[in-house]
Image (cartoon, rainbow, N blue to C red; front, side, top):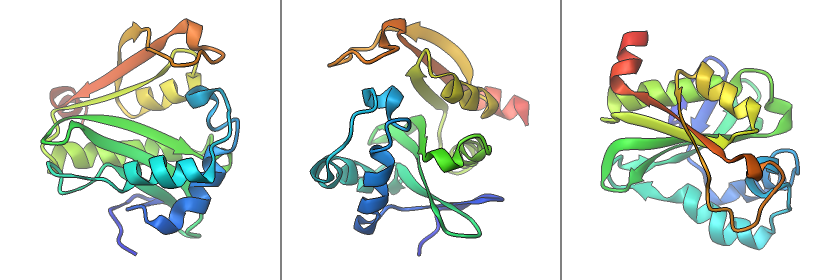
Length: 186
C-alpha cells in the first residue's frame, strides 16, 4: 500500500477501485451526507461512474491525486476521505480542502489532524499559496474543523443548489488560509 501522508493517528493513501464498497457505505449514511445532498442514498453505479473517477484523478500540477482515503493508523479501518485538490489542474496555487468521515470517526479530532497535515504539506512541498474550504452555513461541525485547522472565515454566499436541502436556505460559508497567515501561525 502506497502511503501519501502519515499523522500520529492517520494514514492517508491513494484511492483504488477496491475502495468502492467503503465509499458506498460512507455515502449511504444519511447523517454523513446530510449537508451534501440532504441525506439521500447514492447508488453503486454513481460510486463507480462519478465518485471513483473523481477520487482517482491525478492533477498534473501536483503529479498526484487530490483525494485521499483516510485509515486509522493502527487498525487500518477506513474512516473516510480528505480532499486537497487544486482548483486549476495546471496550477497548485489555490487548493480546496475537504473531508468526509464516517460517524465512528466524528468528534475524535481526525478531521482536524488530517486537514492540518495536508495544509502543512501543501505549503511546504506543493507550492500552494491559498487553501480554501466551504460548507453550508449550518454545518457547525465542519466549520469548527476549518477553524481548528487554521482557516479563517472569509464570506457568506448563496450557492446554486440543483435541489434545495434542509439548511440550504441559510447559504454557504467560505474559509481560507494564505501561505503568509500559515507561516505567521507557526
